[in-house]
Amino acid sequence: MSNNNPYNFLPLQPTGRNETDTANTYAPEDMIKIYEQQFLIQVPEEKLTEFLPALKSFYDIDNHTLDVSAIIFDAIAESSIIYNHKVKAGRYEILGELVKEVIEYDEDNKNDEDNKNDEGIEDLDAEDKEIQAYTLECKRTFFINDVEIPYHFNLFIYGDGYSTLTKKETVLEKMYWFVRGRFEENLLDDTEENDSLDSINKQLASLGIREMDLNTIDEIVSYVEDNIIDDAMVDELNTLLDAAE
Image (tube, rainbow, N blue to C red; front, top):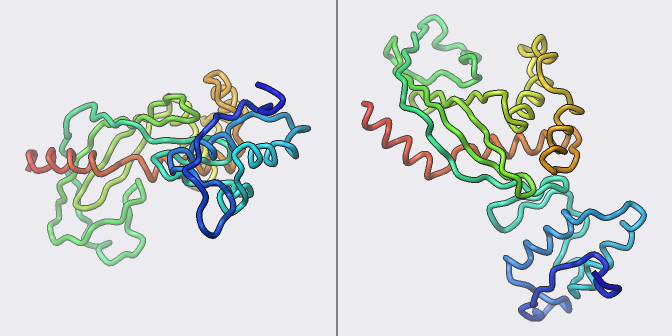
């Protein structure tokens, strides 16, 4: 640190200025580093009003290049900035073999718009009275501020539909149940068994991850659900399903 760089910004080399802006422009991967610094550097509250001007001044950028008012910014990469936390989906693992399940097709409920299974997945149109289904134990690794956290889940597949049900062991899994228990009426009786916000934040602190509020946890759980299965995993699942059939 120095008087000229009190926040220990990472020096980056701009690629030049564009024709319509006077601000320096940076390569996309460098802009990600700048955004990460904007959101992830811990700044004392009394210094907050000085931080953003210092950041813009250090990189010689303006609001056309860096949107300093953004709260959630999806970086031009695999990671996202969610309320001051960098979140990224990592590798997946298939932990077991496909287990065949048989679902009885209820003819009486065929036309019921609300006909869903316990996991909230709509029944597929089918004429057979039995639908072949499979379950599979899986794991996806996620990173919060570069801290690796596993997320174990049971994948339930039938037809073109699927649902997931996670365990309740890692702090990320507990965050899922904390969010789900708050919003789903059928789980209200079980919310006392879920971790509290204070408990989750204590577990995060033990990993060196900053405190989260309700909005942050909601957004991170949404990110996890959106990124739990990717194209590579779908390809492997299709290979397993083809072999099973």
